[in-house]
Amino acid sequence: MICRQISKPGLLVAALTALAAANCSGAASVRPNSDGAVGQPDYARWSNIEFLAGYSFVGNVFEDEDLSAIACVSPTRCLIGADEASKVQVVELSRQGERLKVLADIALLSSAAEIDIEAIAVGGDCYYITGSHGVSKEDGKIQDSRYKIFRLKVDTATGLPVAGVDPKTSLPVGLEVSSLSDILKNDAVLGPHFQKPLQHNGVNIEGLAAKDGKLFVGFRSPNLGGNAYVIEIAADEVFGDKKGRHYKLHSLSLGDGYGIREMVAAQSCFLIIAGNSGSEPSEKFPQSENYQADRGYLMYSWPGSGSKVHRIGPIENPPGKAEAMMILSESQQQIEVLILFDGAQKGGPSVYRIY
Image 1 (cartoon, rainbow, N blue to C red):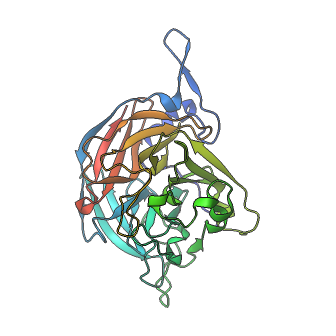
Image 2 (image 1 turned 60 degrees about the horizontal axis):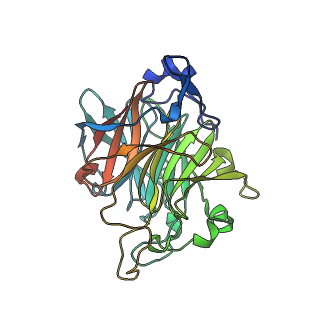
């Protein structure tokens, strides 16, 4: 499948400043101070985050208290997903009306099996949707449906599958399905943690970003020695030949107990929401590593290479678990993001300013 490259939704303001921004998959640029001296790298220029406004949903939001993923393919067409779902929903974004309106459902599986959708990213006119690739945190069961990643080509004007829906299967025509399981179980760092529960530092994906034809897969868990992990891999390798995939494993210094709960590609960096790497104890797993009930959510930026991250600040008074984010606008001075919260009614959509 060829995904047509288009301007990123929500980043039209940033187009005027793109020449001053870094290539996120390479070295970060730096900006001179007013006296001509070299200052902070671009990815580290923000140190504050503040709440601006709340948005609302219109229409029937599926699993509305379990929203965990959002991305937009145009300024007005987005896709949302939920932990417990086997489908995603097309929504219309209105910044003026401060609302998201549900337009359509798109099935990803022919069954109602739970995918455990954790992240959605956009590359050109294609959506990438990933399951957690982890076992159930309640009972440790292995469900094949969780170990999937999808590529869906859409019409950017409508947000709907470009080739329509097959009436026999009710699935989008041309929907591509793959898995990262072979990489995860054979990786020297991640492999020993594959198919273990979150409470025991088990592998779990919660972040996904697309940049320059590559996917950046962010892991909530494991956290090893204060490090969280990101896999960088060409999108076409994920959905091409499964043998001999080439990828790079990045180690990010987020600190003890923190994992990646969401990540998105900005012009000069990746924005990362960090939170508990582990999960609350369950009846089967009464002891939990890398988990604190009062651990909040922190916003970081990362240039796309190396282990160093920049701490922007905490997300104050979150109405739930901060697990889904998309960029509304970006300039050299600030970024505005929309965040959805797992556990909040209809996701508690909230706009924040990073500056």
